[in-house]
Image (cartoon, rainbow, N blue to C red; front, side, top):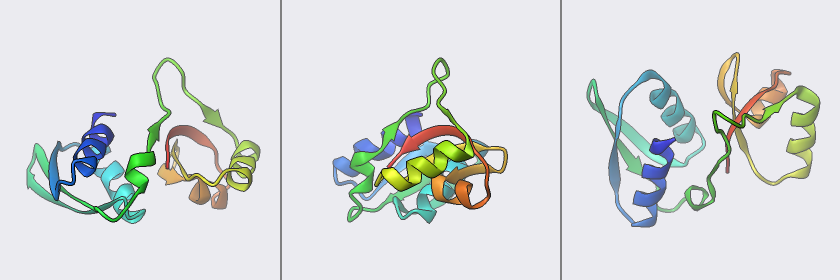
Length: 119
């Protein structure tokens, strides 16, 4: 997703903020990134534009790897998710029927999903 790359590039360039387009899915993604302390905050400027305040102290941004591709979706069931959470030191963000969740939240709710990216 372009929004993640925009945030990665501007964080690595030590910028204080960046601008991204606004839509429902991007707002959900940004709220999850804010919850995980990947970004410092957001401000809706217009119905088409969001200002994203970057968190310079967070090194997670450099390690974000987008795993979701339309041609190659990685689905995980609950059993696989539990194994991922136990063996890996990474946090995964999933598309689930409950919305966008971290792998830990999805395990707590006993649901699987499609892996979007990992931290």
